Length: 245
Image (tube, rainbow, N blue to C red):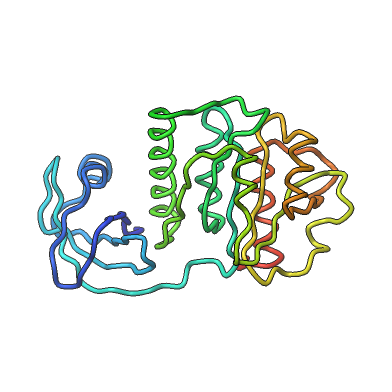
């Protein structure tokens, strides 16, 4: 049986007790029906993993004793930021969940011309927290101990204007008509940013703007992919070509 994993957003120390968050405690007690003495694994997002054992459990509260600390190597050597135009319904959740499983380093939600969903103020804050929870749950499931950050929602043009800086970065956008395929590119020597449009795709003006900021169009086959397919297929291909697949 797989040992359950829980995210604990605080310092964890061997031979000390700690309490699970309310959400994790509910999942442990009410969903998994764990008992005192059961083994669990904890992580706080800093790369380490902690073996632990449940010492107290009730419907609302779970206390565990931390036993030891390890630092397993589960992060990809390929650093990729997914700049994803917000998609509607459960598509965005699905994209973020699977992107985490595929080793994404960071996520930048974007609002673009053809975005169906428009989020501002309180709605945007609630959605950001929801997406970060989706990412945390994906880390719990897939064994990652570093939690990718979901950045604040930005307008595409504003975000592109801020893409300068000292860190060398390769920017990629997909186009079935691009001259070069993904496999023709050399292995990146630094971080990669993958820009994916919404359901209706990026406009021609947006693609031109991205290229003016250093993004390169690449081909991933001759077919037009849905927004959630494009992100995940490209990430899988990049991991196979340059990462740890």
